[in-house]
Amino acid sequence: MKQNLLFRSWFYFRTGWQTYFAFILAAINTLTVTYFLAIDNYPSLKTVFPSFEIYILIMLSIGIPLLVLVGFVHFKRSRSFKSEVDILVESNPYQKRNTVNSELNLRLNLKIVSMMLKVSRKENLSEAEIQEITKIYDEIISLSKDRNFKNNLDLNFLKKEIIKA
Image 1: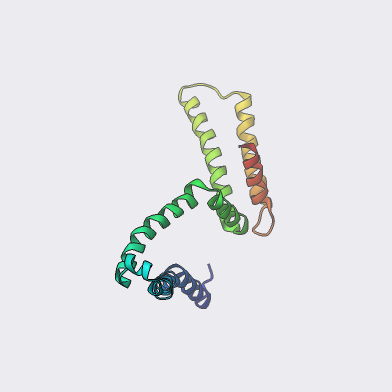
Image 2: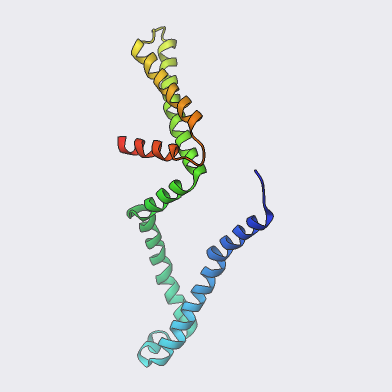
């Protein structure tokens, strides 16, 4: 794999910025602006939040659990994360390839294990079983021969498998 230090550094920079630096700055900015522009100017709110430190403690004690809940809902209870993963798989040829390969490996391994179990019990394979493994073999050979990272054979395979399920 060809490595380009400039682009790799750019990727690490963006990840560090968006995940850590921007998050911390946004939190500090939000707390500061809301306190000094809103709460500091209203005496009724000033009684609830007498100091900036108290405001931070109260907001963190409410905000952290609330944001954990929002994150949980995002990943576990809504369709948004599934949509994100679908887009990543559709737009990343390596992810598509890995997903297709793991599906094919699982299917092939299950069939091989079932045949090995049958053979280990001294049973003969039926013609239907031989045709089934031949069909899987031919499908893998055809897909491996024809697919590349520029055509949509991997994506078409995934869509076909999703429709089956």
